[in-house]
Length: 459
Ligand code: FCB
Image (tube, rainbow, N blue to C red; front, side, top):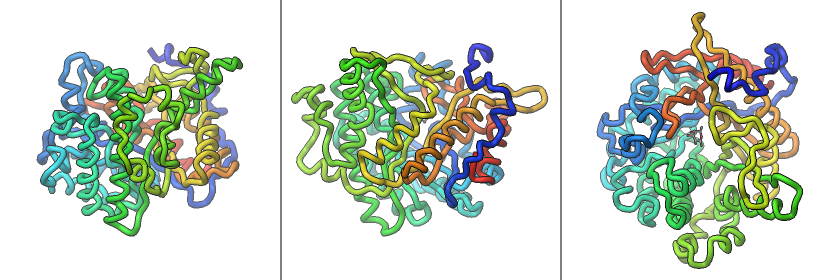
């Protein structure tokens, strides 16, 4: 397996990989790491937590590799104090995590489960005690199953239930969390959950998918408004996975296909939030009778475009399409079948959003690589491919800052190895290795390298 995974990066001799490039980031640049609730917490039936769509999806045989499920995951619900110590050991400035809706409102609506909120209170207090700034995502895909049973994101009502949940969370935690993200990667819910059916709820229903896109956008806007009503401090914004989209060749047809594809990958999510409109070409391509067109009610786009304070960008790879809008692979891939390793794409997408949507403050809230990490007999994990990947992407981010992008922070995906959705535990994305049998944590070589990057604020 390991040999099969050897990427170009792995062939670079070790000293070249780890020699500093002499790039120093601006003073005050924030370095962090990211996780999400369902992927690390475990304790799925504890302290009154309700079922989520991912619990239900994992129970369906064959949906997730090896029929894995988010239990015990990295058992973070119980081990969070030592995980917080690990974060301090790495010198993290910021920790991005998500709050599980089914812990806070087990049925998706109705009474708040105080024990669920208390967990996040303990986590936030523990971060603050260690001098680490919390950054919270309200929704990282773990929709309460009770709401799915009533139509999930296909139902407009779910957006209003999300606003109620958000208000409850803000009431409890807003004062101590300076930065909030509303919805993690709405596009992944649309594409993986409703177009390909490989994520919960596992449907293949293109019409429904775009109604879902609208209701996720509406939910975002409603939550922003709840935030403004709840607190005068703090910042809030969306978290989008953006894919720079390029034509696979120089033909006019490929260029046109790439432009439309960019609409589906990027503008469909960015335009309503930052411009108060859906992209015309995507609306036209879907057709006037589409469920997206039908889902939009008067006033919705005003809500969706309520001003935000930042844009959270998650970058993993570019997309190349040919004249038929078929994807073409250009760059080395990774263990993740969908990934192509192209650091320059990060520069391209950061400068592009700054150019097209104004000088909005940007945080990178996810970027990373799965590696075939192996715990050696001497207790080390030599994940040099991850170091090379991160170094090259940090360099691309640095180049974007020099070009005028207001990039404030960088969160590596992920702090810990975790439950990687339909891949279960087969893909390891962490800076820190998790032995799932003993739940022991071991710093990978990349974690040690990242600690040095943070300490010198550069690569
Ligand atoms: C992103 C998800 C995150 C993780 C990484 C690898 O799309 O937001 O939870 O699965 O991919």
